[in-house]
Length: 39
Image (tube, rainbow, N blue to C red; front, side):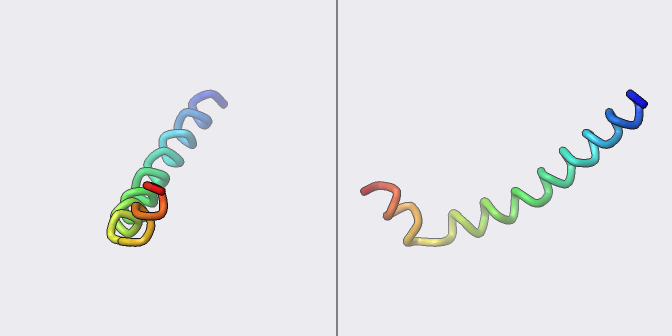
């Protein structure tokens, strides 16, 4: 069971990493967002 949980955590971490990278790239290319945060 522990091996299964470790495998599951590894897969979830990999999926999160792959999903977050395009979101960050998209977020940084939105000119309005950083300006709004600077206020």
